[in-house]
Image 1 (cartoon, rainbow, N blue to C red):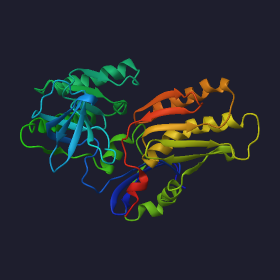
Image 2 (cartoon, one colour):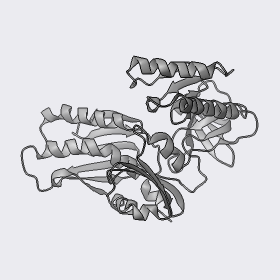
Image 3 (spheres, helix red, strand yellow):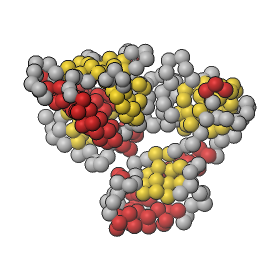
Image 4 (cartoon, one colour):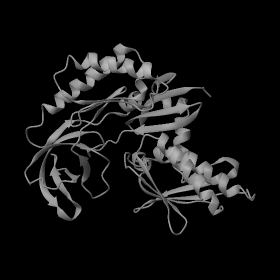
Length: 349
């Protein structure tokens, strides 16, 4: 088993894919969908067609017979031309959710054409480093005529100035190119990033120790063994505990079991293990929407500890998740962005 952070690039049933291994354990998995449906981060030129008054939204034609849904569209008339970005994967039979505030995300920066201003990631605490990054940004910005907003990501910390400058300029150029194509018939302007692009962009802090891109690398690096485990609803936890993760049409149900541990602290130990592992399991399985957790029995006084652990785990993740809280029946509710297609669908031939 290889130690360290290793990015493995290959294909799954002909679909480009990327996996992140950390000390031999799978930490993330990206598989590109081979359909023509709109994918998150793709940008379209659209035209409004049908107001949805009861939902405070409007339907857009984004070309090729595809429809999108924009929330908070009060006052936008039919026939308005708009540039929109796909927010999440569409649920079956529904229009694709989009936003009209575009972002261009790269490894070290995020460009926001509709939100002027400069921000450095809060996680960068060192004043000298923040000043260094500001100098780089100002040097790049003096040569640009746009007034785009810019966010410097935490991954830029201690990175060479030229690499950061090149990254910022590339995103400025991409934004300029997209913003110059806002007129015309509904159509795709910018495709969604590939699995390899996302891996390069997001699997940082720290950077990978090795990138493997070879034929059958998923087989040689044991990725298929990990995928085989993800096909099953049961995910094993320490001390013989487990959680059953089952998606339904309405929500994702998570059932926690203590196994053969009958000690007084068995429930708390299992629940804390779930709090730590669940964000990773949901990402690997491509699950989002409403999540309902039926935790193992434990005293009510433990609830605050469990909720704190959940908050901490999901804050570390890259997919937006709202920790709603405990229900009247004693279950726990989460609301997670549908950023990925379920793994079960991607594994179909």
